[in-house]
Image (cartoon, rainbow, N blue to C red):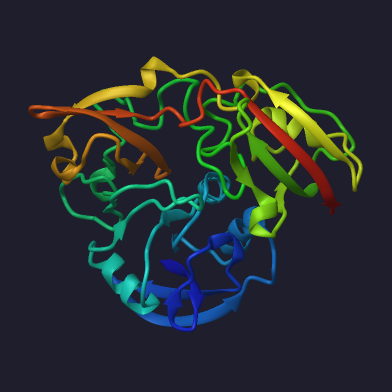
Length: 318
């Protein structure tokens, strides 16, 4: 087993997409037997997942990470434990003991209290991997990650990605055409609501967003806008919900017994946490109600149902 940690001078680096180094730990029989520090070589978010997969990494421990990177890691088969802080070596030891708590930290910092990421015991807490039964399971094969089309095109890694991949929400995209499809594109963008309120901007971060055009890493309308742009071109696009995060899906709102979700008794209405699907993918849910012994969670994306506006500048095509 191999565990990688975003690494900076002994500590967990807090931005997955900007990490310059990973510390990779070789684990046997639940104990670390060796470790090495490897360079990220300055590759982008999606390529970092490939780098870890090439190194046969099984688990990534990191700080902030968004939906696009989460989707890439899931596709590469790398288990994610996000929101960790502090000493890297200690985090790995805590993970192996089942004590590491994941906040599911998104790069936009929209997250709440954590859940157990490394729990490999008999029970099933939010991050439990024991018995193959994560808390994404709500009986009869119905996982938290499977609520129809409304959710999954979820969190965003310095932009607006398809979150858990195009299996839920973006799966209906038709084949995309354009000069940039299949190529790695770097774009600056500014996103606003119809009232002019800005909700995101790569300009403010000082770093373009990098993604593979047409690979399902971005919401459909953003991807389509970039598909045929020329380097240096700037376009303004208005996206309806169907081209962005879809309409809210009532099937993505579910109520379970708090006993099924250890730690949920401490959650508050309005709080966002990350659960783990039956496939090991983390995904965000918001607590919408608590009544007696039950808790209601909403897995719809926070921007579901919203019209979005983007000014997009194509900086580079690789």
